[in-house]
Length: 247
Image (cartoon, rainbow, N blue to C red; front, top):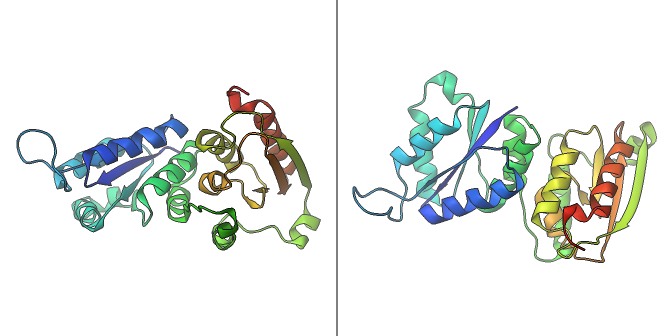
């Protein structure tokens, strides 16, 4: 599927910056910025514009669906007003995500890059989290895994299907930063396997980034399901290649 994103912010620069960031990890996804408000002349001022959001939504509607992400309260209200003016048929293919703007946009873009459905892209945005300390990840790991399509593999699950695992050392200078994390999450999305990387959901770009794994750290992958070995092989090849970055 082709799911596009609209980024609504009170600041024109913030909206454009979020689009620029997310596009680095999802080059095939259409991201449209709708930031700032018009005052009739000169650069956009701080605020939100019904006309800008409406135009951005019209541009993004060329695909199979649109996910809108917003920053502050009035941005949400402006987006909701635009949605009220849509025809019922068009409204069915648009979702307003309740998510953090930056984290949600990155997670949604990566999910859309992998060909996910509209609902899956919304879920990715709304599950996006960032942790400063690895020990703080545990409650979010459970939350992400409990979402649809992200069940934690139990002992019974592992016994019922193929399992695979592997460990590699990160050779690239920046380690598992944003772009490599997006590469792994996107590549694993369509595989029929539950995958964890160092204990977190391997299909969540935000959880992968939150691990904070630098050069020389070990990446440990565990997978279960029909595509378990394929998933492990994919991660191993990506890590060993340094994600195409210098060692």
